[in-house]
Length: 60
Image 1 (tube, rainbow, N blue to C red):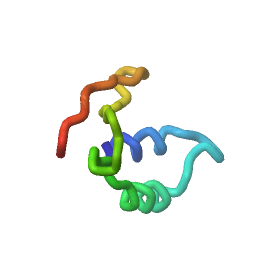
Image 2: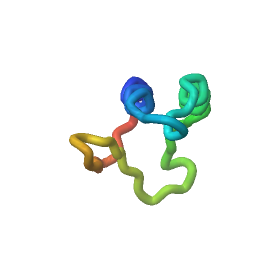
Image 3: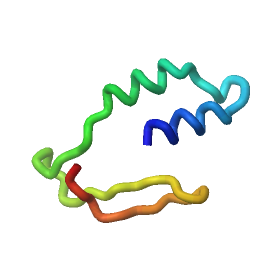
Image 4: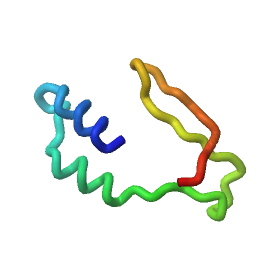
């Protein structure tokens, strides 16, 4: 997933492209959500063929 984010960023032009270190730094700060946090439902979303695919949550 991180590789996909970096690839999409590399394809951006001008001010739409951000520094690679910014993408890596933000990725390092992300945490997976947990039902222990009080969520009633969780889903996994990813980009596939230009649209979002939404699937039921799977513990990683």
